View (cartoon, rainbow over the protein chains, first blue to last red):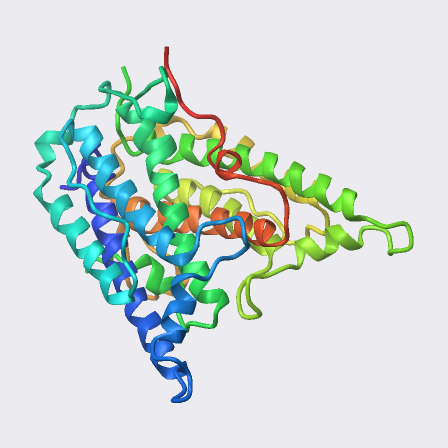
Length: 179
Length: 179
């Protein structure tokens, strides 16, 4: 029996999509390696992907991945009323970004369903909201989930616009088919 | 009291995000109008936005908006076990795309919570899945929502990469603050 609750619509969805994003990063690494010419500085293609943007005043790829991780980590922790681990924003390679995803997923797996279920009315506030706040339900469904998928899609789109061979299936991850 | 159920995490989220997307389209229309020079064919800038893509083998803006609408309309209908209205894919202007969003939102508003709540175990199948199927819960949380936000973000990103002055707030729509 599958149940819709505040845990099942957040934490497992973050884990699934971040795991898929890690696979997307593998394809980006393979793409960078394939484009690397011997007379180019080592890692030039990988650096170019990490710092690539859709337009100059939007976050580059590396930051999109960091923010997606922080949305999942911080958002889930806020709803559960626990303190999330702090990660430095210092990734310089695809392997380091994959490690950040791994750390994020490992943290998400420590959150127990009972820490999240039933927390709909918890007041959520963030420093930059000043004195305003949201309920955990409003935060999760109207802000956290759309924002998380926004940054994962933006990361994907930056790679896509650079010619990395990825498709919708890579973004979605495994399709949840049943027999 | 806010309740997390299969209705509250899908239909109202689609309505909110599509309404925000309609506002994004207004800004796109204003941008196109501002770029229109008198010696250009009328509507040239608007056409250019509608057919713009992030890369040649990805859907153009017009199709991203159509697909986002169809995800919301068809996905909600499948979960509710009802037949959605069919819309032709023939929009040629931003005003026509806004009308499609309006029709989609109007349909979503006809879906009653009790048609969706408790349908987690309903089997969902699509022609191109062949003989496979998903539960409505798996479909909604692991496919429909990520896919819907993917296409809305892609539409947004195409406009953004063309210099339309939009920000994250335009994508999210109103923040669900409480007093």
